[in-house]
Image (cartoon, rainbow, N blue to C red; front, side, top):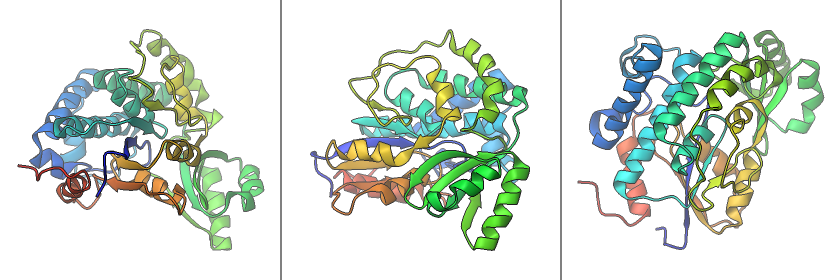
Length: 322
C-alpha cells in the first residue's frame, strides 16, 4: 500500500491514445465522470455542431482519427477523469502531460479551466485541418540510434522519445509507408498510430498563426504551487506563454526526462488519467530498478475502469466506493 510519503502525479496522454468508446463504463456508471462528459458535449456542440457523446459511444464506425473530434474527445475524457479524482478527494502534487495531454495537465494545475482547455483543443484542431497538414505517426520499438540515419533519409522527424527502445516518428504518410517496409525487412516492430496529421514536426507549422490568434485572448493563470511540470523540458513552470500550447504539439518531447525529474522528488504514485494506459507504460519502463514508485491506469480499452478505481482506492487506503 502507498503511504503519505509518496507524491501523487496525474499523467495525461495525447494524440494516438484515443479510441471509440473510451470511458464508456465510467460514463454509464459514474456520475462525476458522466457530468464531465455532458459538459464537454455541450462545448463541442456549441463550437462544432456535433455531439461528442454520439461520436464516442454511439457511432457505428470503428476508425477514430478525425482530428476535429479526437482532439477535443481526448481532453474531454481526461477532464472527466480529473473531475472524478476531485470527487474522490484525490489531490495531485504534480500534473504532467505528453503532447496534447499538456492541455489537460495545465487544467489540473489551474493554469486554465477545463472548458478553456477544451475550447483550445477544438481551435487547435481547426487550425491544423485548415493548414492542410496531412500525414501520420509511427511508434517504433527499437533503439533509436540504429535507425536515426535511415528515418532521416525517409524524410521523417523524431516526435518523441518515450523510453529506452521505444520512440515515435512523424511525417508524410507515403514516407511512413516506405519506412515501414524497411522496418519489415529488418524485422523491427512498430505501431502505426491512429493519427492523420504529422504532429511534432515542422509540417504542421502552417497552422501556427490561426491558433496563435485564438490564444492571444486565452485566460492563462499561474499554476498552483509548483505543480505543473513541462513535458517539453521536464521542469517546473508556474506560468506558460501563449505559444506554449502550440509548441507542445509541434516540438519533440522526451518522456524519460520528465520521469527523471519526478523521481528526484521522491517516490511517486503515477495515476494515468489518459484513455489507454499509454502513460502508465511509459512511466513503468522509465523507472530505475531502485525506484519505489508505482503507476496505475484507470481507463482501459477493455472496460475495466471500475476495477482499476478499486485498485487505486486500495493503494491509497481509501474506503470502498459506495
